[in-house]
Length: 355
Image 1 (cartoon, rainbow, N blue to C red):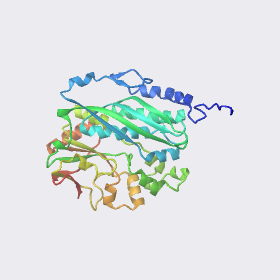
Image 2: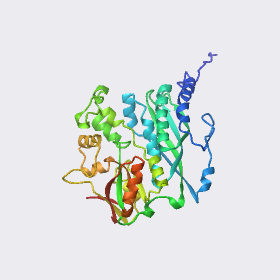
Image 3: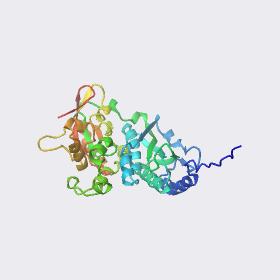
Image 4: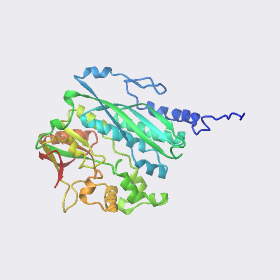
């Protein structure tokens, strides 16, 4: 009779002790995001969040969203820089739900990793916690899953899930947009978290880490590494505060994958178009980050292709009545959000056009 083998979970590639160390490493970061509605802390099978405050709303509506960071993670892994991608994860989720006027309440993350290293997870989750603090939501829980034999040891993937709330009579959206409304843009910090499959193909593949860290004149002295890993701007916290102060906004559009062309149209009713002024012979109508200009040139994109691929310097679009433009811009500026005119709403069929 063959001797029975003794095989532990660690022998199979899963280090339970390292997982416990990772949890200990992130506790303080998670605690910093707490809100009064959070009940308990890390360690339970489910996360508890009081809904008592919703009773003050006329018709509370829960608004949820989920997203990831995409192939930007491959660049973070190549450069061994993991402290910013957590902010990207939060931004992609909370700024999707804020367009309805929903306040982000709580956030959960899922980290799938080939080989769990407590220090790497701590960097990632600290970024997630930082993003939650910026948006005003609580990081109430998550999951770290080690996948030996399925993922390479240094690989990981992130997913996030957010729940927010809006009072239905006050919700924003295409139903409020009218002909003659004005479209305002809020600047992006760079590429944000979309278009990275193209970025990797035209600007990252074939370069060494040393080359990626070299300053480039085309980027104003910044390195490619710094430019492409700059965190996605988080707008939700500032927008919610501006709305609470009375900003008369009709609708918003989070400019993510598909660029302005495929996102601003999501804020339009079927009978109206958004006409965007993207400038002319004198240059663009607003500032486009050098890293985006660099990528458009490296890929040889046409202008139309560029506006359907990258955010082109616009991270969020806001639509309001022409009489309310000054008030909206004033309240957003008070929250640290710069704005610039992008275009106007005209009769049409729910599309984005350019001039």
